Length: 552
Image (cartoon, rainbow, N blue to C red; front, side, top):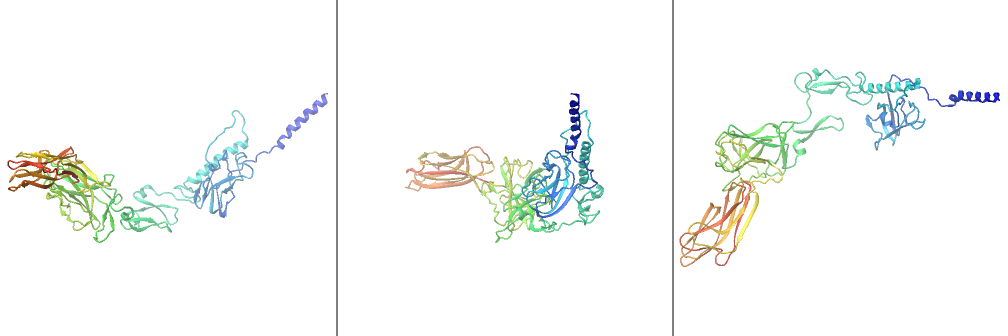
């Protein structure tokens, strides 16, 4: 019995000793060559199927985290619809075969042509650790240490200060170091004739050769499609970007100092325009017969100023008013203009479609008229643009003494009304008879109310009525009134001897109520002597009164 047992034990021992001979042990970890982890191929119309030719240590199967692929100097992503690629191994699925993978193959998803570069770019991570309190085999230790050094080599190839690729260039290029900061202060960064060594080039003055871009002032620079160099497009910046009627990067500023008013063009940042940050204004052509337009860039401080007194623009004390700001294009040089465009005699248009002229006023006290354009220097038959307007809602205590800034500043834009534009209209009518024997003004009962949008706007009042007078040789007076205040002019209607009066009449006037509150306008009448005045005659003819707010 003992002999058979011994035989069985011996058989088990022999089998245990033979087990390593039957298992497939992974190959040794190869040494890491002292060379860049990069492989280059030139392909034409193929998917490459190119050997990576350096060991890959990445865990998992996210091969896009192990290498970068460049095609004709441009990095392409593994999942790109046109240039996508994958990494495989003839040894089996890359997620389960032993590391490092020494026979990895790059294959594009579709045929490509050009220079292919495969560059090591391992994303460092360690998802598993060695077991604690147990030995570590030499192979496992070699794999971990070589993986670390390979990652360091990839980083060194990309960023080192001898053969690295920072600032960052394409793989394979070796760029020189930047010059010293003291050499480059206030200069342009460029490259020498090799395209690899950074140099600092002075933009003018001492310190190096001056650089002059081949672009005409005010023109749009573009890149040449063949050389890649900057060249002149031959197209003005304004023409290239701006439409007729446009204001680009413009704003208005109005300030008062020592009782003088200064209006200036600013940029949207609130600064004076510069060549780098211009305010661009579109004007009609300076040629009357041309339907073209031009865009002019304001590239420097541009303003209009009054004296400390005298320039009233035709307005009285404590009267609300509006000043219009205009731009004047004199052969590409822009000047500012100011004007008041309405008073109780009516309104004055600003015709941007016409060529206009102005009166000189440089820090002057002689801008005293309504309906006159004042500019720093006199202009003659040049294009203009409305830039906006300024309002003083309560006027000035002393007209022409600019002690207060405007209560409202508006930059021209869509929906802005111009002088003379109707803002709103209200109408009332009556067919009823109304009579009066009064010898002083009395309301006829025909009236209309309007609430102006702005206190500086005009109200045009118009009334048509039929007035009868039942007594011969009696004068009948008619007029328009705001509340109890007479506005405009009155009319006298005289009945002849032996004939009673029966006469249609109309009245029209401009008024500046100076308020945004509801304002009533009425038709009034009275008798010059004893008599009876009748609204709408004896046949009940109709009468009407209309109030229209006008942008002043």
